[in-house]
Image 1 (tube, rainbow, N blue to C red):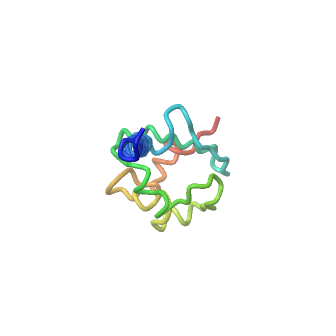
Image 2 (cartoon, rainbow, N blue to C red; image 1 turned 90 degrees about the horizontal axis):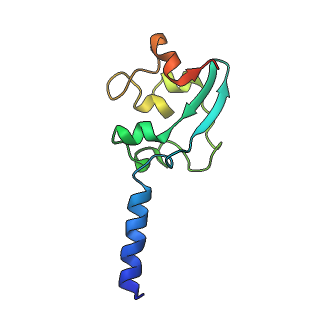
Length: 104
């Protein structure tokens, strides 16, 4: 395969892979005092949010490298950058807690 074809294939793989915030069928989860939070990138991809909107502007790519507190999110950092009641549901609205925080 010549260099041009290889470049085209690599670009195609990059853009196909960047369509999802996290690979389909994969999740990232962590435990919080309010319950387990599970991030499923499919929800964000379905909302037309691409990986590069958050990585690495808001979140680093390495799992566990970001230490979030709810106060940070409520002040517009991390998830709160979009989950502000304008672009997406407000993370600081107590009626929305169960969207992210699961008791089970």
